[in-house]
Image 1 (spheres, one colour):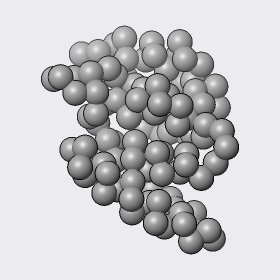
Image 2 (image 1 turned 60 degrees about the vertical axis):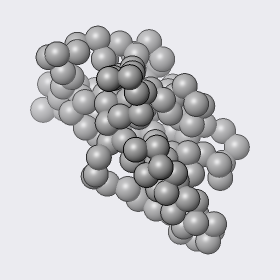
Image 3 (image 1 turned 180 degrees about the vertical axis):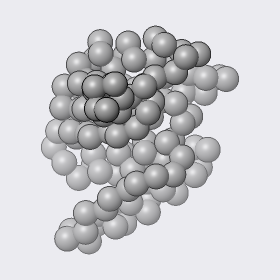
Image 4 (image 1 turned 135 degrees about the vertical axis):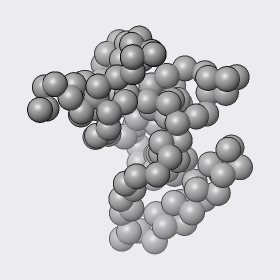
Length: 120
């Protein structure tokens, strides 16, 4: 997974090096967001603002011995200083019945969480 992340980061860094290109990434495995954020963060002076539309917060901790997985990109991005949680909004979050505490990191770090119930 980490070698795939390296390749994705390099591809986005290459796109960004052309200046006028602003990539938009939608869909795919959630773990690919992390290398995209890494590439974007290298182009700006401060942590990024983020609009995250999804059913899950993706702010989980290590899972099966790895912190790099589909359920953790925004926690890792916060930990690495890639995103500013106080300028991050998560929309449509309905959480996980198996891990209800997953919302806790979002809220504790300052992310604005709008639940699916609030949207609908």
